[in-house]
Image: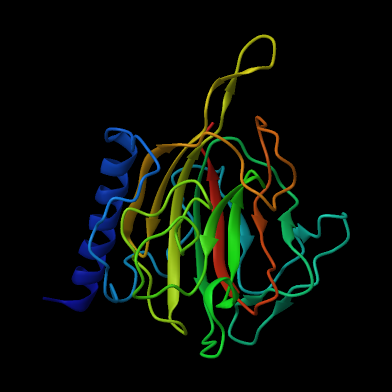
Length: 248
């Protein structure tokens, strides 16, 4: 098969999987599913995905050169460092996007460096906080059982359905669809947020209801809109190709 045609087919297949995941029956609870451990799934079908051109809403949060749209929690400019390869290396403090979003589709790429002497939560730890409050864990847990604090977990709430991690030193992807909480006329939560996550092109959370925020974010309150927060946990995790498409 022609290489270009294969790449087109592979990318189209990933979009079909994402569509099925968004519309499928919700993932009902946070218990481990005892799925078999995934080996290396190979390069993600969405690695290098271009920002959506379906409309003019998509915001590019990191394009390989400028990190100007990010700040620290205290409001100062983020001190993360752009690398020669066009990635950004976490450093100093959490990074928070200047823009906020409600419902959205997010694409980002990340690399967990090899840390052979580190153990547990010290192995290339970071996290992606949706609305700055709900963490999808980043960690080197290649080859381990899915857990509530492993890579791909909705931290301390729900393990991934399967461990879809690649080995450390390999680029990985998250493709995430987030539905923000809904509020009634008295500003009380009437519908909890929901999230669908593809890790390296594999569905690991399927329209999961999120019952509460997770530790380490901006605060513990549910809000209508919020920024993206990338956690600095002391490890030199790298990110790239970050874009987000509002869905509201």
